Each structure stands twice: as structure tokens, then as C-alpha cells.
Image (cartoon, rainbow, N blue to C red; front, side, top):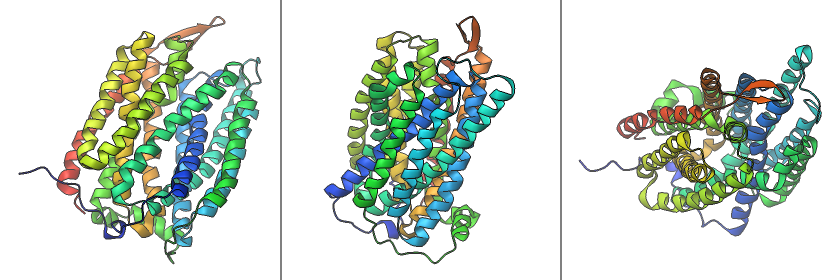
Length: 438
């Protein structure tokens, strides 16, 4: 038998669309990039902020990440279905980005002031509750605007023939966002000026929300008369899963890859700072992100040529090799090389499953599908991954001493654990090849 081809996309998604124009590309890059800036701050630097000003306990970071993932998923389910019902995405993107920016700026007002000791006792509990609640509110606005409305608009605006290229570019945006934050704003965090750090990103996000009102054009998707809750329930029904096995199996693969990334990603800056003691970690990450971004863009073009299903396993294999290499890398040059392979493989893997998901998304339910995507590709990974990472960190018992106080620190075990999680991907790919024809 010959190799299996990529299952045919639903009829609604096979309609040809015009070649992407300059305005569409500008909206994709600007709105997408600023969204990733805000997510970089929330997913990585907020963890450092909590570690430095509230508590070094890795379980606090795991609770923070898991709680925000639940809030983000609920928001995406509701806002995605709402956008389908309206047949419009622009207003939800614009208003959501403005609220998202306000919440991001507010982070700097929770936690110990610069130079003050971290809270203890009742003050510690209060600070943890406050930062978790604020993160949940921020994640709800951010996910409603970005993961639901913007992602659905991207699906509306693209076709299977160009989604590899588009998702290859979108996959690079988180890396560029990290590079911008590391290069332009990391000095603020080192100086303990967290209010200005969060404020700058918040203002940029607010401005992008206002700009998106004029930049984004709705694609004339027919409005659905279906009730919002009915649309949400529709995507969770077993009968829907049985009718669209390719979509749900692709999302299951995404869940595994996402869980692998979340085992190490929330702790990676702390690992570089505290375990490897790399003072120039921002420069090292900058080099890694530039190289990985270039490789990811090339990967998107290759993906369109060879086919998404054929491209997936090699991309995941590169990701796994990079994770294993990070487990053993200690010197700066080796860390840069290993991290480049790891990040390039990670982004290529995520771009592939993202493009495959769009191909199997019904055109009239692009918003609602984002909610299902959030459950499998974001909420589950962001709950399972950080808690698995925290358990590995606690079990390894690596520590460092700061001002006479011994504190837990992430070790290289987080990368080895992330690689083990990826073993499930080939199993799901085999299941999808057999049962995923839609």
C-alpha cells in the first residue's frame, strides 16, 4: 500500500479564496504579534514576577498557569460561539485587546514592591489569590480576543493551500515577541521595575486594540441563529466527534505537543537564571529566537509542499532531539545550539497541527471550534504540563541559595520529561491515519 494522504477537508473549507493581500498580512502580523507579546509576559515573565516577589514555590506557578488556562478556555468557548452567531469578529478583537491591555498593566500593582521582602502568612495567601484572580480576568479577555475572535478571523481569511505559510508565520510570532521582550524590556525586570514593564506591554496592547478596529475587515461569514450555549455544547457532543474524527484527533495530537511544551516553558527563564547561572541569558535567547524563527518560516513553506500530515512527525522528532540535547547542555554555546533545535522543532510542530486544524474546521463554526481547540490544545496542556513540571522539580530537589535562604530551582529533568511526553504523538498519528478520514 502507498502512503496515506491528508484526509480531505470539509467542503466548507475547500472554497478558494483570493490571494492574501497586504492589508490581511499586516493585520495578521501586527495583531498577532502584539497578542503574542502579551502572552509572553503572561506565560513567562509573570511566572518570574511571582517567583521573585510573591513565592518561589513551583506549585504556585502551576496553580497560576492552570487557573488562567481554565478561564481562557471558558472565555474562548463562549466568545468563539458568540462571534459565529454574529458573523463578525472585528469588534470582539478590538474591545478585547483594549481590556486585555488594561489587565496586563495592572499586574505590576500586585506583589511585593521592588526591594521589599516577599509576603508571608496571610499576606502571602492574599497576594497569591489576587494575582491568580487578575491573571484569570486577563486571560479571559485575551483569549476571547486572540484565541477565539482573531484565530477564527484567520481561518475565515485563509484557505488550505496557503495555511502552511500563514501558520508558519504565526508560529514565529511568539518567538519574535520573546525576542522583543528580552531585548527591549528585560532590563526593567532585572532592575525590579515591574510596574513599568507591565505598563509598557499593556499600553501597546491597548493601542493595538484601537488600531485593529480600522485594520481588520470582517469576512462576511453568515451569522448563525443557533444559541451560544447550543453551539458550545455541539462541539462537545460525542456525535460531533464521531462525524469529525480528523479534527478531534488532530486536536488530541496538539494536546500532547502542548503538554510537552508546558512541562518546561513556564520554568525556562528561571532555569537559565538560577540553575545554569547564565547572566547573559537574554542575549542567548535572542540568538536562539532569531535562528528558530528563520527555520520556522522555512518549515512553513516546506509544509505546504510536502503536505501537513507527512511533515508532522519529522517536526516532532526535531523537537524531541532538541529537548534531549537541552537535558545535557551546560555551556552557553551548547545551550544555544540545543535550544535552537528545540524551539524550531516546537514551533514547526505547533504550526503543523494548527494548519491541520484549520483545514478541518467547518467554515460556519470557525469561532466555536476555537473553544474546543482551547480545551485540548491549551487548557489541558497548561494544567497537566506545569503540574508535571512542578512535580519533577520537587522530586529532583535542585536548590540554590539567595541571601542565605535555600530555594527550589528547576533542573534539566524538565526537558527530559517533556521529551517523554512526545512519545504519545506517533501513537495518535497512527490512529489518525486509520480513523481520521472525514
